[in-house]
Image (cartoon, one colour):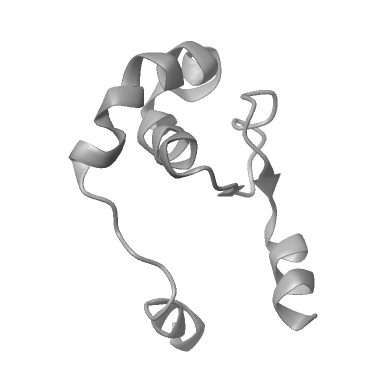
Amino acid sequence: MAVLDELKSIVQPLELGVYEGMRTQALQRIAKRDADDWPVLACAMAVGCPVWAEDADFFGTGVATWTSDRVELYLAG
């Protein structure tokens, strides 16, 4: 939990208005795998950033996906 608390200084929540316009496109890309994940994908698409996830639902959506081990390597470097 301490690590997650530290992330608050660099991770900022997005207001719905920032990513809501990407809903349809995000659902088209991810609905067959897990439609409930559309907000995460829409946020990534709206701000042009990768997704940090351990499942493969985001693979093939057109957005880079980082797993925890890759994030750890990046942050350690």
